[in-house]
Amino acid sequence: MDYYRMLGVVLLSLLACTNAEQVKFVDCGSAEGKVAEVDIHPCPSQPCQLHKGQSYTVNVTFTSSVASQTSTAVVHGVVAGIPVPFPIPQSDGCKCGIQCPIEPQKAYSYVNQLPVKNEYPAIKLVVEWELRDDSSKDLFCIKFPVQIVN
Image (cartoon, helix red, strand yellow):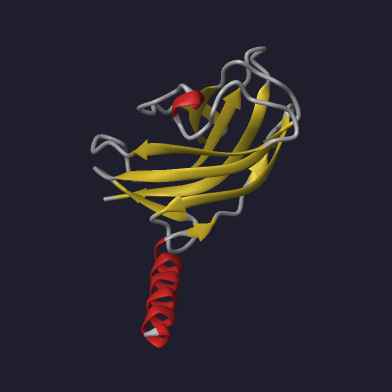
């Protein structure tokens, strides 16, 4: 019985590894926090290939250095150095896995969806994702490369 339980855990772990990968990211000014890890699901290789018409789960694990009553996400696609607003379904970070109010020196797991619309062009770009506190300072700011594909 224990053998099958262990086998199940190993198989599930391997399956998880094939669909999500810890994403290499650049910190772009996390003034009020520190990012520990970024995961995108599904993203078996990098840069993540985002298929039109699909939605991707973005999970950012970070530690806040300040207290904040609110948190607001702002996402841009940076194309040729120009940031273009990238709409997400939920900009309120307090509805994305974070229990507000945010406390200093506490770790949080922010989880949101990144929908890729069919009308987006097939292109390589950089996603810039900010989560701002109630003073509009960045709890985190990360950049990671993606490729939109058909």
